[in-house]
Length: 207
Length: 147
Image (tube, rainbow over all chains, first blue to last red; front, side, top):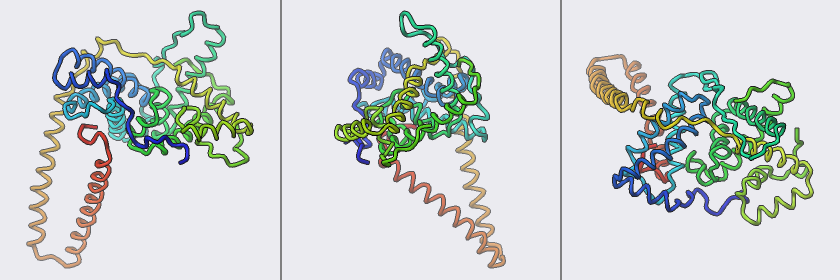
């Protein structure tokens, strides 16, 4: 792959603050543990929600993920970024849960209606542009639920979680070049589904 | 629908370009191609619109009080672990005893071959999966921690 970054397969550098908090939490400092828990459980919940589309399942999975996270925090290398490890735990729990139910995820977990939050970021938003953006966000979110697991995972990690390719590669245990090619195919597939929905004139409910 | 690039350009690079994940040289190559290729430029626009929609999406989050109300899950983990240990012990003891009995009982050589062949096949599959896992774990930066 000509376009790959030189840091093939390497995880991104650990932000100094995060490393410090991890080290303090490993030493058992309550405030560091609390801060780490607060940050990580939010990330874990959001990722689980984005994969399952169901807030109740997401909360259960995030809770389990935090238990696993803190159970092995003592063995964690603090020089590495926490996020790919945490998100991998969540991804594995989501897969386990789907496997246990023995049905396809989209059949068992319909995306809940109150998952998305629409709050204008601009101080004086143009109502029409805002409505169009909300509608597109809701449509894309619904279409995402129709994609196969491996496409949804890579799309969520990149576009909703904003992870760089290196961290996605670590979280999914795939080469960095595969991240880019899979992400491209996933985006093209998502674009295709969105276009089909738009052409069929389907009404899109917010969230 | 955007048509495919007539010059068979590697469209995967457009995603890398959009995410700013290419090397400087490759990024320059993509930029030059986009200036000349309307199809790839249209694809980039479509993907950019899609990405802007996803990246600006906000999700509802539970407030902090909800976390403390959830069951901690330690009991279920303990029960499940104990169940696994007992199940494995049972399999080893009962399976070993059954095999021993089978070996001691005079049986038709064809039956014996079928049983031994079937068990060997399962054993080989198990070993191959374990070897794959070990190989994968060696390259995993998070191998020391739970996943």
